[in-house]
Amino acid sequence: MKIVKTVAEVRAQVKEWRDAGLTVGLVPTMGYLHEGHGSLVTASVKGNHKTVVSVFVNPTQFGPTEDLDKYPRDMEHDSAYCEELGADLIFAPEPEEMYHEGNTTFIDMTVLTEELCGLSRPTHFRGVCTVVGKLFNIVRPDRAYFGQKDAQQLAVLKHMNEDLNFGIEIIGCPIVREDDGLAKSSRNTYLSPEERKAALVLSRSIRLGQAMVQGGETDAKKVIDAMTAEINTEPLAKIDYVKAVDGRTMQQVTEIKKPGLVAIAVYIGKTRLIDNFFVE
Ligand code: AMP
Image (cartoon, rainbow, N blue to C red; front, side, top):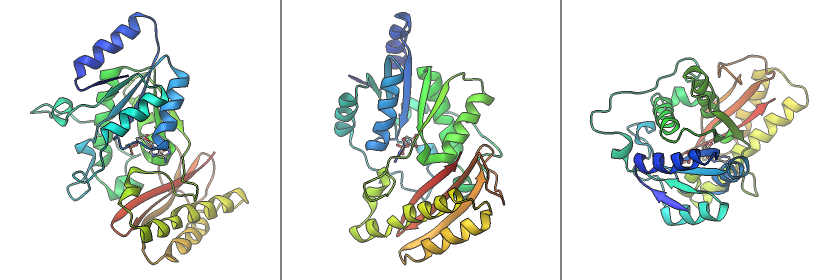
């Protein structure tokens, strides 16, 4: 498996594959890979002849007070893990390779980015759409793989793909969890042992909401209130949001119906964690 740092090298490799009639899958990541990322790589390796994993901590999707500088990095582990899973190429550019000096073009989206994480992190999706749009143009994959863990991101990128005619098949993969229920995340490494225990309140509240909806509850307020009460039982937890939205438009709903999404963002100490369930 090769690791390359420049756009030109990715393009040359992908061209070689294309000329040989091979299909290409792309898995965009910020690295520090865990089994959540691994499930996307495995899906891509199964679904395509060749798989490109991008490892890039994208500065434009971090707000000024967020964790860009302390975001965990471990290229040695990431490359060994990708190799083990059967990926073919890692694209690990430096920020200057992705954003040349004087870069003034960004991809901005309305409506779908107005709620949930878009509300708490106002410039986040502009950064996500821009970097993923760039990766789509650099790699030109047949398929791209994203986790349902970042449910709003998945909806936003599906929409961007339609709006901007990228013509890529966007594949959403289920949330991978730790044995005790916590959704896997590179940011879990920030948690102290005490916070790690407290963080279980996220998956507990998700299971509670999901059971209510599966039991036939459609009143969004009742589900949100129950989930909120559950999270508030944990003294280290501070709610950013608990919301029910339409699964396609990401706009808030009062009645939960298909396709729907119930999503939460909760601070455990200083660490902001997210979780969700789809109603499909
Ligand atoms: P990140 O490196 O956090 O930007 O994530 C890269 C990709 O991996 C995104 O599409 C995420 O949704 C996905 N991902 C992260 N954590 C998980 C998880 N626990 N389960 C499934 N996918 C995940």
